[in-house]
Structure formats: C-alpha cells, structure tokens
Length: 224
Picture 1 (tube, rainbow, N blue to C red):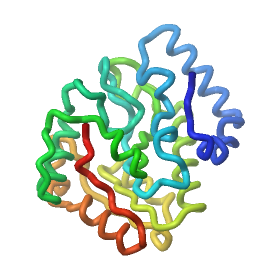
Picture 2 (cartoon, one colour):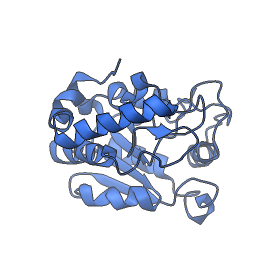
Picture 3 (cartoon, rainbow, N blue to C red):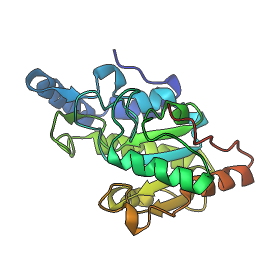
C-alpha cells in the first residue's frame, strides 16, 4: 500500500492525475513484473510521508535510490538499521562530526530522525531496478519531484536547500534565493568529497540560518 502524508497528497494531486503519471505507473507495473525494484512499494513516497509539507525546514536532494538489496528505504542517502553504511553516507557523517564536533558512529545509517525534524530527504527519481543505477530515470519521476520542489519554493519560505553535486545543483533553477537559502557543494561520494564537500560546513550553516529565521535547528546527530 502506498503511503503519503495528506498534506503532500493535496499539493501533488495534480501530478497524480496528470497523463505522464499514468504512463509512469504503467512503466512501474511492467518493471515490477520482470525485475526486482527498490524501494518496496510501501516506501516509494516515504520522504513525503515522513516529512509533512508544512513541516519542511531543510531539503536534501539525491539522484535515485540505492539499488542493492536491503538498502533503499525511500529517504535519500539513508539505509535501514543493520545495513552497511554506503560510502557517500560515511562521508556525510564524517563532515557532520567535523563540522559540529559530534561523534556519530559510521556504522549508523538510518536518517529517519532527520526526516522527523523537518528534513525532506528527496530523491529526484523515486524507484530503481535492482543492480542498475539510474534505470528509472527519464520516465516521469523527475517531473513529479520537480513539482514538489516548485511547490515548496512557491508556497513556503525560509527553507534551506542542500544541493550536493552537479545533478542536485542544477535544481537551483527551481528555487528563489530571495525566499529560501541555497547551499551547494560537490557530491559526498568518494570520487568528489575531497573537492569541497569536506569542509563545506553545511550542517552548521543550515542551523544558523534556521535559528536566524525563528526555526528550531536540526539535531544532525539523530542517526540510528
């Protein structure tokens, strides 16, 4: 059963009713009839179900879900408890520890605690075929998630957008910098983290912005 918070359903209802979304559903039915796909159906909209529209304070944008067994849980960069932490998330934790002086174990990877505080952990593509990164791109998901970003841009104020890597940074065209705060850095993957993700201080900078705009900062140490 698909789960999505009612606040997001109302915002995204025109997308669910659009012709492209019907085509996307047909594609997903065909994919699941032939291949293993991630995340499980009940977790496809987990980012929207975990962080209601009017509670979003920070947006972190990923590209597509993890594509190996047990990893994808519908929240970008996050893995369930007990699953080995992927390299990009290890680097994220490394930067948090350096930035904030925390001591988060690099064996913890469940970011649900962020989502519960108002961090929308959104992948641009919400599903993927097992073992094939990017396999569900350009089938409609990007239109859907761009609409979600645009809705936040238009209907909310003072959200922090953390855009890591060229793919995420390209989404800044959807965001009004006079209404929101945009922070960009290289992707935290091992291939690029040393080019400026390490030392970006995005976690402290996000909290400084939130506090300056009357919002409760994020407890970034809440990783399970």
